[in-house]
Amino acid sequence: MGSLQGMSIPLSSFLSPLLESQGGPFEDWEICAIPGDGSKRRFWRLTSHPTHRSFIAMENAPEDIFYRRENRAYLKIGTHLRSKGLPIPKIHNFDLDRGWFILEDLGTESLQDWGIQNR
Image 1 (cartoon, rainbow, N blue to C red):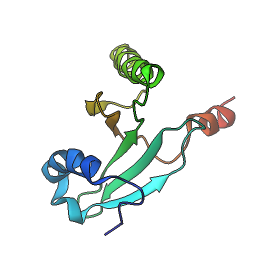
Image 2 (tube, rainbow, N blue to C red):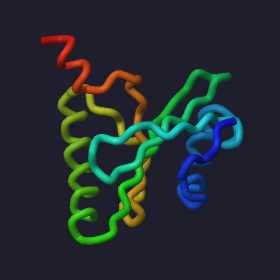
Image 3 (tube, rainbow, N blue to C red):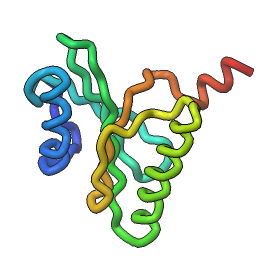
Image 4 (cartoon, rainbow, N blue to C red):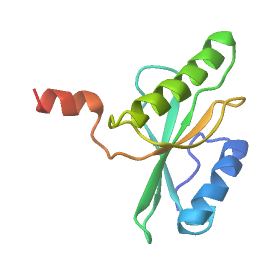
């Protein structure tokens, strides 16, 4: 379906086991790059049209100590806030050494847009 659009082959290999368990072979998933949030993080929406499942893949390469710390903080804070019942995407899998995360897809509306509409 969709192309890897900037996704590395090792990252696609990391994603394959989850995607195959959720809706067929990796090749059956549509993979579309989505805009980031102003940081160097890169995001992709992964969609299986037959099963209507979707996930978000995020890459934040740990090039130096700052990004390694940022990834550890992202994992700890995201897990903590979700455990408190806040609407934070579930982290399905991660590889801190490479800066890869597989997240729950909460839809196409950004948190900023949602906040503006619900003031």
